Amino acid sequence: MQPIEQLAFVLHSRPYREHQHIVELLTKDEGKVSAIVYSGKTNKSNKKGLLQPFCPLNVLLKGQSQLKNLSRIEVSEKSYVLKGNFLYSGFYLNELLVKLLGEMSPCPALFNNYQLSLALLSQNQSIEPILRKFELDLLDELGFSLDFSPVFEQTATSFYYMPEEGFIPNTEKLRLPLFKKAHLQAISQENLIDTDVLHSNKLLMRHIFNGLLGGKPLNSRKLFTKQK
Image (cartoon, rainbow, N blue to C red; front, side):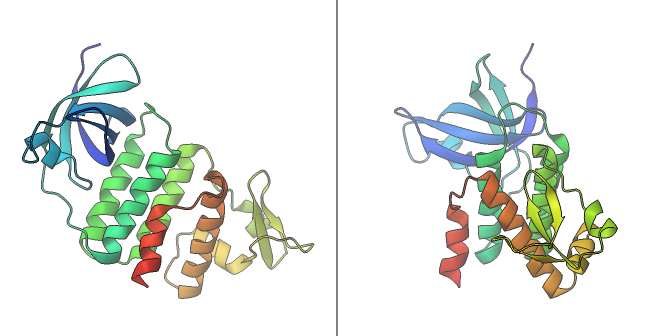
């Protein structure tokens, strides 16, 4: 199969061998891809300058193994300029994708949602709804779509969330976060205007993603903490 040029974003880059980097890309057609790129012998290398996050790129990937060769890379359009908490939010999205998204699994809808999230963050739009929407989209892509039907069908006024069982009524005391029924219903309907609902949504997503990450902390969250 002939390699094709496709749109991509750099999620993470690290030095590899001399004058080489390994980059993790989110691509339009192949999902998350790891690739080796020759970065040049000087700090002014054109390729090295392009290995930056939040910049839409056109890339050409070659090779049959999971670790591709990035043979061509060029800017597709202007980079999304993020500052302060908007920048940290972008790093948060990248870190979730690097740590949770499988290799070489096409996810065009998630790619589009990622690019839209960057666009909204670059416009200094409200951060919380952007992150929460992307988290839900990522859960869908990972096969962990949330079933909110129990919070409409059950009479309980509050619920726990358990990975294996989903939302369960608060019929006994558990050492888990507890969520109000009204808040969960609002979250399911993407009605994220109320600050209390936003807070519950943040706690819910953190609870779920902490489980998916095996309790390992995210470096991007530390940036928010330092900012505060």
